[in-house]
Length: 426
View 1: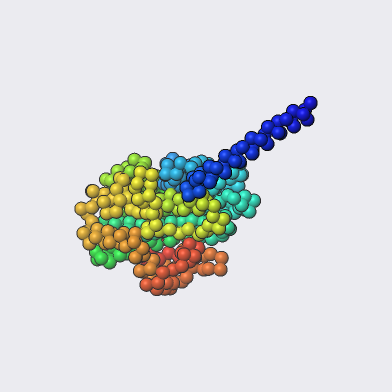
View 2 (view 1 turned 90 degrees about the horizontal axis):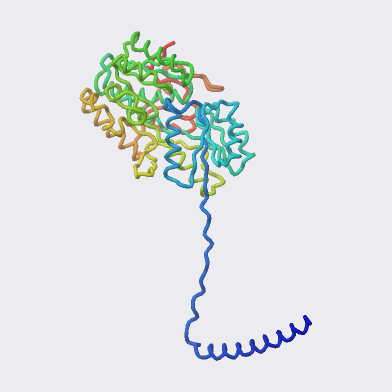
C-alpha cells in the first residue's frame, strides 16, 4: 500500500515538474533582456568581544594616591568601553598574587595586573599556563617580560620636573623636603625629575636651594611618614614638602604647620577633597588609563604579541568617556591643569619667568619636543642603591652628558644614583 501511494504521488509530481519547466521556459524566454534581481547576502554579525580587567592592588584603595589612581583609571576604562568590566582585589601581597589571579581568571578575567612590582612579578610564573590572558606588572627596576606578560610605567618624572620648578620658586627658606619610601630605581628616577626642576628654578631666580630626602622604609606607613614630615619641617626648616610615599600623612602635617605641599600621583584636592589649594600648591596626576587603554585595546584586537614594555609620557593621551583629553601625566590641582593648576594663593608668590617656563616646558613635553632627562647632565651624588653588577657611581661622576637621551631600559632599570646636590638624611 505504501509503495502504491508513493508511486501515484510520484506520477503527479512528475507531471507538475514538466508543466513548471515549460512555464518557466516561457517566462525566461520573454525576459532575457531583464537583469536578474540581486541575491540578498546575509552577513554574519560578529559578537562583540568582551574583556574583564582585574587589578591586584598592593594596598588599600581608599586614602591612597597610588592604588587610588589605578582604581580611578580602571573605572574610566570601564566607563568608556561598555564591553570592558573592572574587578579588583586589595592588599595583595606576593604570596597571594597568583592564587588571586587564578581565582579572577576562573571568574572571567582576561587581563590581570599587579599594581606594584614586588607583588606583580609572580604573575609571570603562570603566564604560560594561561596563553589567552594578558598579565601585567608595574616596573620598579626588573624588566622581565613574556609574550603575554607586560611591564608598564608612566614618565612621571616629566610632571615632577614641572613641580620642581614651582617648588623652587615658592621656597623662602631655601629648604625643600621629600618624605620618601626607600632607595630604588623608581624612587630615585622620580626624585631626579623633581630635583632638576628645583635646580632650574634656583638658577633662574638666583636662589640657593637644598632638597632633603628622608626615607620611611616602605610605601605606606602613615605614622612614620608623619614623623618624618614633622622632622623635615622642624629640624631642617623645610617650607615646601612633597612625598614619594602613599599615605595622606605628609599632606596633613604640611597643612597643620602652614607650609606648602606639592602632591603626588593624583589631584588629591579635586578627587579626594583632601586639604585645599591654601596648602597644596600643585600636584602631579597620573593617568594609568592611558597605559591600560593600550593593553585593553590590544587584547580586544586579539594581538598575540603585544608590546611588552610600556613607558609612556606626556605626549601620549586618552580621550575619556566624557570627551576630556588626558595625557599620561600632568600637573593638576582642584580639577585644573597646566599653569591653571597652580594654587591661586601660591601663584602671586611665583616669579613670572617661572610661570612662563612651566607653561613652555609642559607644552613642549606634550608635543614630545623636550625632556628634562635629555636636557640635563646626570652627575652622581655618590648615594643611591647598589644593584647586582652595578655599583653606585662615585660622587662627581658624569654618568650622562647633557643633550643625550638615556635609553628606556637604562632609565627603568639602571638609574641607581641620586643626582649631585641631593641631601640624603639618615
